[in-house]
Image (tube, rainbow, N blue to C red):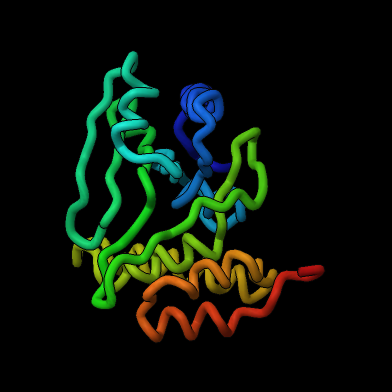
Length: 186
């Protein structure tokens, strides 16, 4: 049994994104829960292929808080329901070689919610595990390991791998991603 915040508000937020034509997908611990890698989701992280201003307009009727980029995070965020739902506007990270964009790629559905790419989140967690706030690094690195392990067992989507390898990834992350076996039937 997975412990998580209520799904109703998440589904309502995702319905607004869909109605606005904004590509979106559940990520972070929600994605890990969908893959059976964690038993607890503290909040819902949703990547969105839209800028912060667009997200603020779509959710203008709901109280929320917006955040600009900070630390290694090159993206912006809109939090809803006191942070229970975090909308990530154009998921990206500052790295020594520039900015790495993490694409929103829907790979499956879980509890009626579109779920993002384990390849994308393995890379994101690997970057956060070395570049993020030091207090968060161990947990983020553990998530990267879990996702890379899952991908090693189940295979990676070639399209997601190609898209991520086109970014200025650190050499160690790129090598790890490139070494993943392809998903069956891919």
